[in-house]
Image (tube, rainbow, N blue to C red):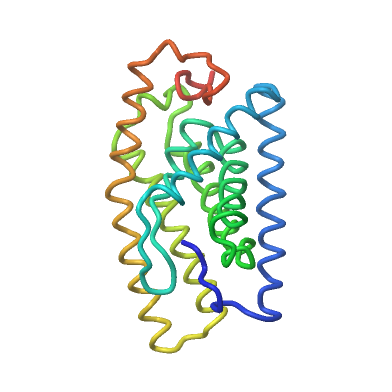
Length: 226
């Protein structure tokens, strides 16, 4: 989902500064909420774990250039279910920054666009989870249909933001539209895989019930909300 250099240039990139500031600001609010609920040590540990996993997603997992961007296996819904929205927001922002600073410096000017593209869909699925998952249901008991909706919303959000930046930067030319369509079609393949990963991770968490109450994991993973 990296926005390639040259897609958005000049004064147009200023818009991404505003969207990133808003996204990071809301992520900070979620982090503060996590501290109030679970403590700063829990937030820090979960944010570090999420950051490491995000870096792995970008640098270790396979990546393919398709159309106007790159296809990554970014398991946003998996991170949300394991660590919660606040720590995951930090993990996405930090993992992306480390990757841009030390391994893909050409992507650094596009950081504000890329971090917006990652964070806003996360906030959407956090809100969606509150609507489609009953309060008494722990995440380890989720069904395929529920995790599929989360994955579809997250990956669809990434495709939407990439399409927005491409149209904003390059207009509605035939080549640009074809590149967006090709990217979108390829990225939807992730939607097939991510729910299966989610269910496998949740099944493993359920089997490892001794981690219930661990400050390294989101409490909702094992407990419903009373």
